[in-house]
Image 1 (tube, rainbow, N blue to C red):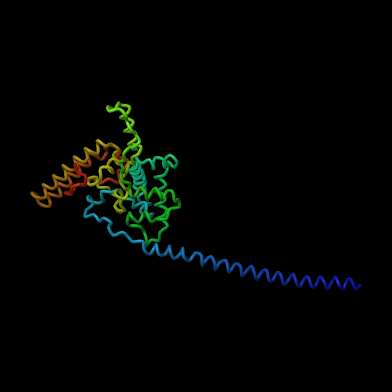
Image 2: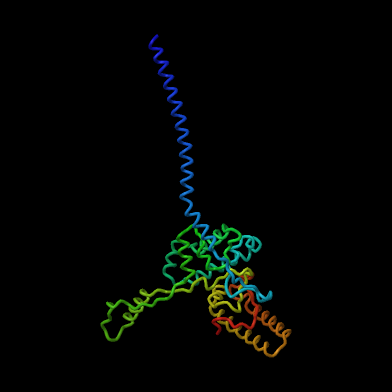
Length: 315
């Protein structure tokens, strides 16, 4: 009888202690959850401040081209505007696809002699496509009031792939060509070089040289018209469009002749006559090259307007 009393008393004490421990554990769990949330907020604060500072310092481009007429719309560069503006992209899907195609062609042409890019493309054949996708995704996530309007700001965009970001930054800035001499210990003993010895020197010089390339930032814009002025475009961009270096030479020759014709009309004719001359020159230029080479692939991007502005790299 006394043993039963002791057992009941022990069980009651055990129940009280268990209840206390459960309450204590619940209180501790609630405290730990609150503490964890607090510490996470503290740890995120510097990152959040840095992000806010970056967004605050992100400058809006001020040099978007505004054309004076429909025929003069566009710039001498390829516009990536549709990659940065989702609303315009949905409305101009055909132009968007052509822009991506031409951008990849241009990037491939720029760095075709770079050993670094050759190795990168062997490992990642879709590298140029990944670059454009990263730009598009990053721009889509920006607040409306912070949309990028300057091509230089594209390099500040956050990419999900550090590797893709590295090659994009390299491509944007370009790389100067470095010509190095063969090592001093490469000696040719004979006074008169044989063909084999001459080839050896040439191969050694090429092995110690670095093929440079021009920066992508010199060939792109964010102009909202999405038009490339063929009259003003750089020969390398023309080569990316028409995919024929001999055709590019012909385009340069014809556009310069037409520009000189407009310049002459400025000094001798009235304004009405001048506009007529410009329209005639535009049609002549368009009819000559609208379907030349690979131009049909970029039909919505090309503007054949002719004005009195002499193009750079004019021949």
